[in-house]
Image (cartoon, rainbow, N blue to C red; front, side, top):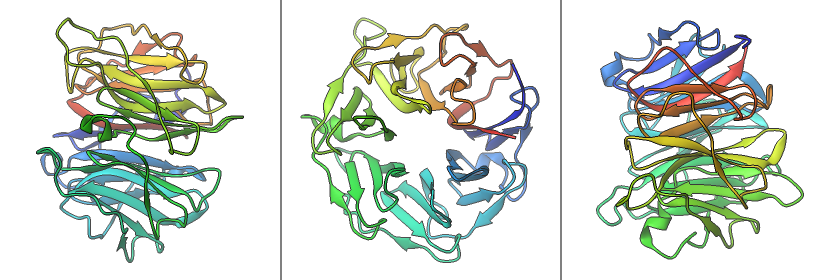
Length: 330
């Protein structure tokens, strides 16, 4: 396996981690990040227009790296001190960034963090005893004026004017738990499909979020309430191939990567070389190598596939609780 790529991880209790050689060596991210116990990194994003620019969202604030995560700059924002669950770049404007927090809110800067504005998304502060979280922000690659946002206990929202105003999309499912959205990914093909995994399965839409299909995965244990899902990823050169992180709970005690190669019609649980010790929390791809897929378990395992999920290897180093993962070319 060529080690000509960088891996960044965000952890709970361990801060951020950086490997410039594909997982051969690691260092804990230091200044300007506070000590790891005070800086819980829950979100990472790579700039679609520049693979060396990375955003990190933490419980302390939002950070920007211009050199593959080697050095970082803290951007002062109204999100400081809140749990940041999502960050995103604007593909067409390097100065426009987004961040999502809990209690629920989405913020935008158009001047690289000098000033921020809170987006006009009206989410109830608490639903069913749970505090909603802005878990996903995606600027649509087809039209940069379209921005998607997913909320844990809030559903799916869409803006058609770059974030100035927002539409609440129809609930993906028929139960309140179906408004618990963990991620949003867009597969652009002859028929574009929007994927939105949640705790009970994965929803998909072929009509821009106006209606949703639903897929559940097999339960891992008798008596499980459902088969839990967290993140999704699209194979960059094949919109019909989608990966979903799956497990028996959060964090659970086992998990796998589910893969579909026909646009979500059928799925297969992929074989990992070491049984996962918890659910698969995040999955990372990058267009520079469409066949490289990375995945992590919530409880610290990191897996790499160089053949789009047909085979995997587990990295030797294990971490604490991993909440964010990306890889990017050097």
